Length: 291
Ligand code: GUN
Image (cartoon, rainbow, N blue to C red; front, side, top):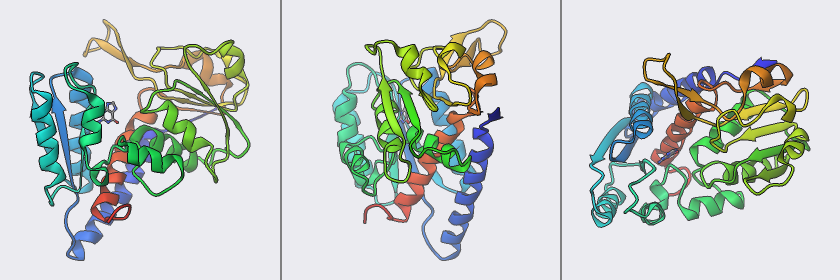
């Protein structure tokens, strides 16, 4: 069994990005600039945004954090997005999700200029990804593919079972896994799937993204399978300083011995998602996807 070290790979990719930023600046280019909008005080979101800002610093990007209280109106938020769309110094920006209930996430996503949508959530980017055109691919799916590639895990003709059909992970990662060059045979399971244990047992590669702690147990995993755990549920835990424990969708202790490769939580997919965001921001700064 080999542990997939997301932190290690993330650090490698960050060094590669930092090197490229140095080159750009040495050649008289502009420092890449990411802006992050955060609304309210969701604990998970505040942690993620802090990591995103810190990672920008590590690779030499400029970053701007824009904070609003959770009573901001939808119109005021949309106006802020419009400002960023028109700000030539900002190469890319994201609005951290989830948003308060009175704001439509879909409206917000569609208000972002797709050329600055480094989250890859805009329908134009999602659509271009699905037909294999250059675009910004969203962070988690892109991080998963990067891990699979860097560990040289065989995907061609392999059975890949994705558990979960979210717009952020399940759907896009299933789209990427069937694309030419990756060539897996993909099954997507969800809450209405019949005999889910049998379906998952047929997988050479399991991508668990349902947000249900320890859902995948040893009896669902074929010997030698690769297991990618996307779960990050904060389960209350009295023994930790924060009062919770980040828990994946896979019952790691019993599943790991059966695997050829497995990602831990934390330290697997998580660190890669931020790296994907940095990569998209660099692409945006270089105007490599859209002019
Ligand atoms: N919330 C959870 N994941 C993400 C992400 O990748 N981007 C944004 N903007 N919000 C999120």
